[in-house]
Length: 294
Image 1: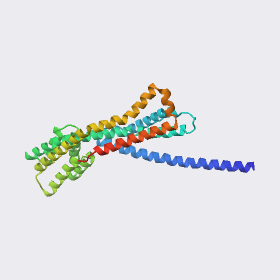
Image 2: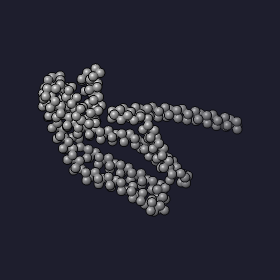
Image 3: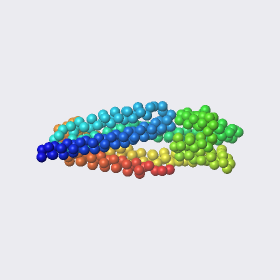
Image 4: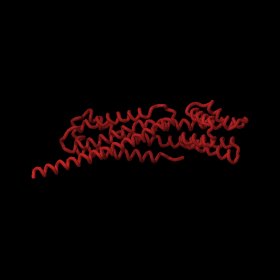
């Protein structure tokens, strides 16, 4: 009987170990594929921004930030009394570590948005330059060259790459489509569409450029007006959203004998989760309200 019991126990243990090994291998492979896709996407974004930084270095920084965040968040939960505190700490720390891992990607997205905003402002200067060049008898390629010589980055970088593609034999339409896809600007899409239509069916590009420039100026004025009108609401939302966390940090510093038992109790953890969720939903709703598509 004892032999049969130990045989069943060993067989169950081996089966559980094998299943765990298979699941761990599958998860490791999936994580590797996700990390590879994440690295390729980040590398393409950096390349489009002319930032020659290895994407793997940013991914490694994300892993370091995730590990550090996990350890810091686990400090208050490193105990076994009550029994639920350790699993809850692991769950919350894993969520915080996942957010920290995405920080480099968020920084790159912010830099890309700033670069796109600067490009759109430079486009307002480039369109009159191209229109004047065409009035002077220059070709469309020479008009692009005048823009590359008379502007700064990022406009100069993008137009110089566009001209370089033309020199190595890429057709004008393909190079223009690549420029539009690489920059990702709605205003540039309007310009590229107008140029492509004018080259295919004819048209006065100087007047088209002047009209597009006026349209972009009007859209920019409306955006600035909307941003001005919503500045107070966005600032109030930021202050109100940060206030619970700032008060909690202040209480933890000045009254730790009150805050630490609260944070380490089940009602306290539930309250913190509810507050965080409500603040996140409130911030998301405010961003959706003020994100007016123009």
